[in-house]
Length: 191
Length: 191
DNA sequence: TTCATTTGATAACAAATGTTATCGTTTGCC
DNA sequence: GGCAAACGATAACATTTGTTATCAAATGAA
Image (cartoon, rainbow over all chains, first blue to last red):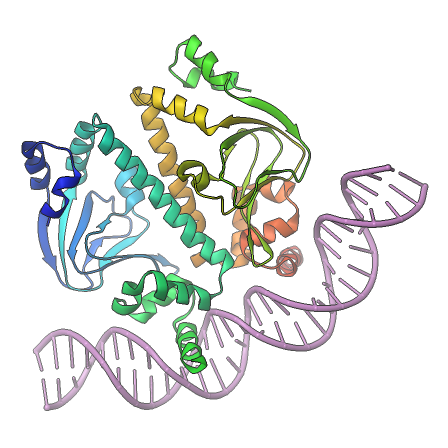
């Protein structure tokens, strides 16, 4: 799982082995809840195989905010960092193979590597990138129609359209399942 | 302008004076464009007095993404950091008193202070906070109706409702000016 | 396989929102 | 003060989107 990243981290073999040994491998079925609403999230997950959905409960309605696939890391980020009760649920969509690490171990690693400028800068860049991604997704809500957002999704994140059940995609795009069905139907008939 | 922040930064008086001297004070009228669309933004602004709007042009329609008031700092953030052409326009709403600093000077300061853990951590926290703010604003688009978003705005950012022309608020909330008018009208008549 | 569950399409109707146009008020400027 | 531009409210109508209900197809578990 981790050997593919080995050359990206300027660490001694000793440190590398120590850090990667903090991770635990688990296999879980579809629809497994990894982090519950209200729980203080103490785990960070990396996906070896499978796919994960982050959603929250809004007056009984299930609203999806993000999807994650192979090689991405997932946490209830605000809960993980600030120790707040998680506002969101983190749940597998497909049967998945995951690696998790505890917050304690992450903190240990961060404390040690922050003396290494390359890694520190990489971390800061990751944070910026996250912010930019949110900005972009947000902009699409004030500037695009649901149809345009669906077309962008096909273009930019085809994995989501291919692997995720449609009613989750509907709430991710901010429309009802019926309306997403209509959008697809119209697109087909126009072609 | 800066003396109110003096005690928050663990710097020698010498460094403090050097850094604050990098800032330039300007006074500008309302509707002054500070950063144009497509320009590579090399300035960061701090607002002493007045109010600023960040917007972008979407097929001729003027869409507002953020508002800023006194003591906040403003840049076309992605352009400033990554040296991309700015996708947004940064423009004053009211006549304003601003302080600006060049990207070069910001880089100089960042390079020097990154050896100071307190400041580095403060910077990282600021980045996280920005991301959380975007997440929150984004969530409100998938979970709230325009009426609810308007009520939240009154509650959480009364400055915007009080100081910003209504048609800018409409595009910020993602509705037409006519519909925002309707929303206000309904709220009044229900009371 | 068989049956229950999940998923997705569609229709009919209701509600929300956009568009265009008009009008009155406010604001800024000379 | 007076004029032009900006701003905001409202009406009438068009379009989009949500809701509820029904049905068919796909999927998964025993």
